Length: 153
Ligand code: UDP
Ligand code: MG
Image (cartoon, rainbow, N blue to C red):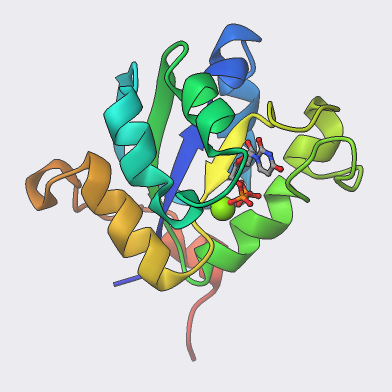
């Protein structure tokens, strides 16, 4: 099975009506959508998602932001997707993100940076389990996969 990652279009992405643009970039890269949930993330779930940041001074503000309005929580699949998406997202702060990246093209602040993407296979497994049970992840063939990855011959 190809690698999976948790991608969230954060409240600013939904409110700024950028969800379609962001999803298009993921589709255009050839990734496969395997789960999606449009949901208002509770403070409790936001704290669980950002468990690695529990000691950070920005946690409180981050949790407030993430639980302030709905988000689109998704699982996407592709070979090497975690690293590719991190590159596509750009640096954490929009004001520092390279032009050409999602954050660098569409945001310019610090906390409000449109998108979350897992940063390692372990975080991906954990973060996916925060939002989705195994039955909620849809297993299917992307019929054009060989046009994306090429044929092994
Ligand atoms: N964040 C913040 N202040 C900071 C650092 C991060 O508000 O000083 C927020 C920002 O929204 C970021 C999230 O916390 O996306 C998680 O931080 P992380 O360092 O994991 O960045 P990411 O993996 O999202 O690039
Ligand atoms: Mg992170």
